[in-house]
Amino acid sequence: MENKYSKKQKSRALKIALFATGVSGIVAEYILSTLASYFIGNAVLQFTLIVSIMLFSMGLGSRISKWFTKEVIFYFIITELVLSVLVSFSALIVYTTYSYGDVYWILIYLLSIFVGVLIGLEIPFATRINDSYESLRLNISSILEKDYFGSLIGGLFFAFVGLPYFGLTYTPFILGLLNLLISFYLFRVLDEYISKRKKRWLWVLYLIIFSVQMIGFVLAEPIVKYGEQKKYKDKIVFSKQTKYQKIILTEWQNWHSLYINGNQQLSTFDEFLYHEPMAHIPLLLQGHPKNILILGGGDGCLLREIWKYSNIESVDLVDLDPEMVRLGKEHPVFIEWNKNSMNDSRLKTYAEDGFQFVEKSKKSYDIVMIDLPDPNSVDINKLYTKEFYRLLKSKVQANGFIITQAGSPYYATKAFYCIQKTMKAAGWNTLPMHNQVLTLGEWGWIVGSHFPLEKKQVVNLEPSENLKWLNKESLTQLVSFGKPLVDTSGIEVNTIFKPTLYQYYKKGNWNLY
Image 1 (cartoon, rainbow, N blue to C red):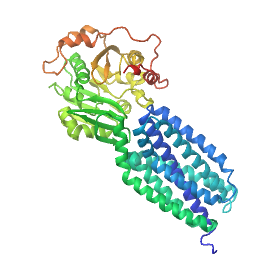
Image 2: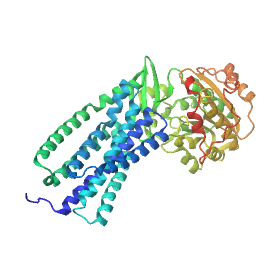
Image 3: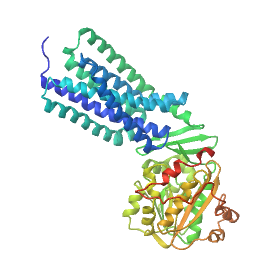
Image 4: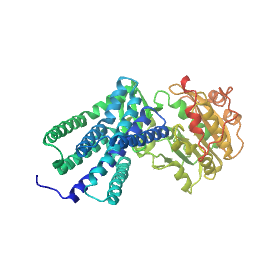
């Protein structure tokens, strides 16, 4: 048979295939890690486990590769085909399994093992094939180089393009199809080394897999929506995977609930039980606040309460996710929810990290309200650290206040008191508060000031009669606590270099919820 391609062209095709493997392999890893974080929880743990399992599995794949002594090119292409299928359908497999049982977490780890083994097989296969085209010195370096470079491109694609624009629905199919097409190119370049019978089988396999991928691409969205819906008892009316988080809005009768990464943030049924105490207590304590900083709060409900005070001159709202801010400003449910508070001319919004914003800000504020998700990961944890609370001291006026949501003193007792202890260690005088939020349970806040705080300062406040729930009688309840349910004497201060808070949070009394 006439040699259609030169050695250089064959080697190049092999390297392109390894580059594509690097791209799709790392993206499969991130997809499975994101799914594990979403369905199982604890993002740091899940990313650590998935990455570790996949690297170990790559080692297994490399070991298994030595058992293949003949027709390495054929088995290399088969490996590429199987990898293409697994990458394409990884998210759909997890979502579908979640809909029908509790074994989805096992499947996530099994998929990471299979993908790792396949990648581990491909690198030795490619090295052995390329041995005919390049010297050992160039062969090893160039093969590994293309795989590692592909991993970088795949990571950048997932972070900046795949996840924010295509989500977990279509990103796997885009990468799976890329892998399929490039493996087909490799097949055409190296087909002279494959028997006619096996070439016919490969042609059939390519047609079947391409057809199945196209069908999967078309059916992906309804399957993912079905799988998501099984996770929530109420009807999903909005769903979006952003660069930072999964945002879900559900509806039941006339009420809506907001979920971030599967955790309920608030409900229109009773959100005022959360937002009224958080907003009005520091506003009333300060007396005449003019400039306010909100960290988080992109739903606009805190703003709704703040605008009830005519002396407010400006509010800076910092939320990491611009999509959350957009929803607060534009989505009909949120506009009705927050009384269009996000479109007030006195408001400036910033889509950036709260820690970095405070660090570089030259402004000072009368009140800082920290309305962030629970500290259940290292990323969020830094906004509950001694370093952050100390940084805030220079940004708050002498007669000003900070208030932070502090989780549940009932369900995460140690985490709640860890936040208070951390604020004290940063130099704040503190006062804990709590309230029963019907859909969330007992929830709490910590108020901080430059001067001593006492319960009577809250009890003596005079809330407006126009508020939905907060009144004079409720103030005593907000600052009254029984004994903690667990021993809190040995709680440590939360710092950036020793993030203890999120561990306390994970080990809370959540079984009581």
